[in-house]
Picture 1 (cartoon, rainbow, N blue to C red):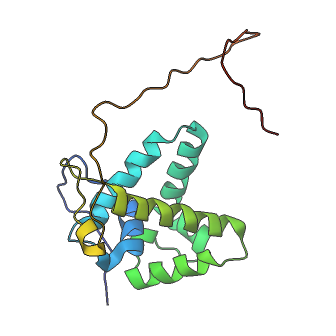
Picture 2 (picture 1 turned 90 degrees about the horizontal axis):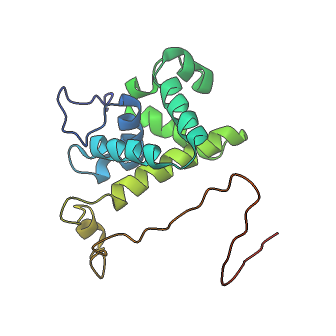
Length: 174
């Protein structure tokens, strides 16, 4: 029997401060990770939230995480008046599994969002040296070449009114 996941009293800067995201990461990666993996994965999920281009998407995700952190919100989504992060892992897995095939589209969407964020962070997040401690265990040797020294920047232009643009090609999709 497992117990609820709690963040340790002190965490490094990359570690998550959200018990809901720690519990969500533990739900999806569980025993695959090393000790502390759910906390690191949750921190990476928070970082991904911050990088979302749409403020509306960021607000929605923060709202859902907040809802799952409260008794009333968890009751609304699951029928159980206990915050999601206080549930045993087996129960969280059961609920996420039921959401994956739910007739309610919103639940299926939430399942996909949290599953993809957890696995992306778990498998894609790298240490300072560019490696991930999980990669050798799954047989992935890592990137074939080193990442470019400086990221290529794309200059964007904000159009505030009628504007004439000069370009070599135009791609129009309908």
